[in-house]
Length: 324
Image (cartoon, rainbow, N blue to C red; front, top):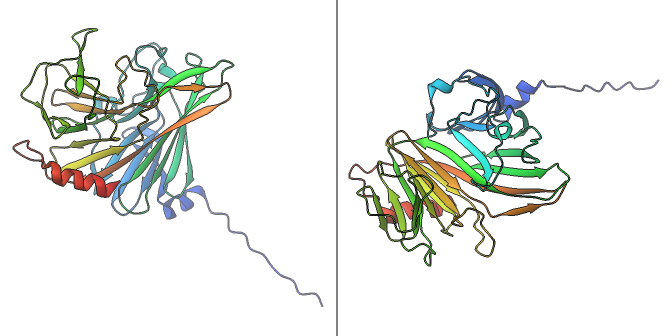
């Protein structure tokens, strides 16, 4: 008599797989189809409805990203240009890239790709000839979030662009940016404005100081946009509610950077409302059908905001070194 063997195949629904692996589909701030990545301390919410953003980056339930409730549930209406808050990314150079609202404000698609991993994919944009893919991976433990933006050329022509991050964090904190030891800028940094002016020798301000080759912006400034050509590959920000936000990223000293002042990073300190933390990638020549990528690593740590606005740089640099 033949032995009959029964094989049972368990087909788990996506939600079950997601919950077991730190991922799930949720609604957040009026947006459906968001993707949550989480571990025991950290929560990330990816939002594909308005430009493929990181909507939340939380440590112990506290979000470091700047939010504006007026944008809850808001989507792009053709012809109406808006500036979405939270964890934004973009491509540049700023003044030569064609307007591309479909990438920056349009609807993306999101999908879970593995444990605490997901990606968001843009439309194929006719203005620029590229499609963007953003991949995210949250560490099993701790706050490290790996953010990779891929620029894919779907056109029939060579395209030349660069990575340009435009992440908004909460306002009123302390921005810290390492300056190049042999900077091409006389003061190690430049400012933009008013209007189209690029100021290579900005005047001194109370809330702008340089200590040990680190540019510290600790409060409102006359002109909000700063550019640096540093090569250390990190940017940091201390919030008033006691968090340290850190980005690390590659810098390529022997490659061409396409912003007009050849900067590798920018900080936009807007009043007490928000601050923009912007790593900039080198220029990329992308053949038809080709793609390039740039990766930022994000970290979020508990850190006491210094009431006197005097940062303990030795302690800060130690934390940055340990995180990297």
